[in-house]
Structures are given as C-alpha cells and as structure tokens.
Amino acid sequence: MAYPNYGQSTYKSMPQPGNPRETEAWALTESARRMSVAKQADISEDDMLAAVRLNWRLWTIFQAELAGPECALPLEMRQDMLSLCNFVDKRTVEIIADSDRSKLDILVNINRQIAAGLFTVPPPAEGETAEQGVPTPLSTNDMV
Image (cartoon, rainbow, N blue to C red; front, side, top):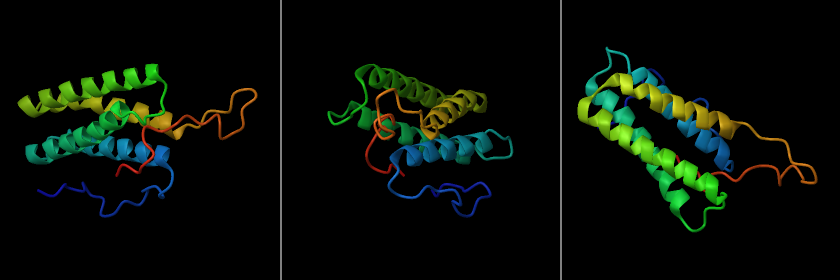
C-alpha cells in the first residue's frame, strides 16, 4: 500500500542532505502532519493506520540509533529518549489495536516537541566555539 500524501504532491520543505538534525526534525514534523490529517473522520482507517505505522518506523530508527554503541548522546539523554521510544511503541500498538484516532494527539505532540528542540540550535556555552555548543543529533545519517 502506498502512503497517501494528504494533498501534498511533493515535499517542498524537505531538508538538504548533510544536516542530520534538520533531517530528523523534518521527519518528525512530516510524520506529525500526516497523523494530524489522519485524525479527521473522512480519512480512511487504512490511511490513518498507514500514517501511524510510518511514525512507528521513524521511532524504530531512532531507537536503533540510540541503542547503538556509536551513539554520542550523553547516557541520561539516551535513556530518556529510549523511554520515550518505548512509550511511542506502546501507544502505537494501542492505536493499531483499537483504531482510536483520539490517541494520535499525544504522538503528534511528542513529534512536534522533539522536532522543535532539534530545529533549535542552542548558543555555545562559555568557552566553547559555535560548533562545540551544538548537540549531537540522534544519528549521523539522514534518516528519511
């Protein structure tokens, strides 16, 4: 089954290669957009579930990157993100099991919040250069 594009024929805002943070933020935002559209009653259940499964795949990629030994994120941040991945897994299974569109809201909000954090580049700490102040993305590869 092809994923519906929900009225968008091309990805006009797709990030340029070479910026993993921006790619991850874009993927989360795009997935949130698809799930938000899928909440509407006139969207078929199959299309709603396709949007949910696409989001699940994205979070599975995050989970695999976070669990890998080459992940450069601090341990506490990795653990927090893995806990969030676990929550997304459980909520996704619930949605697939009962097709309750109202349960999509939390996944949409999580995606938007994480994307907002990835789009934000914090200023460098005192004594750091601009490059040193930028947190490491979840992965070093483009994910979408």
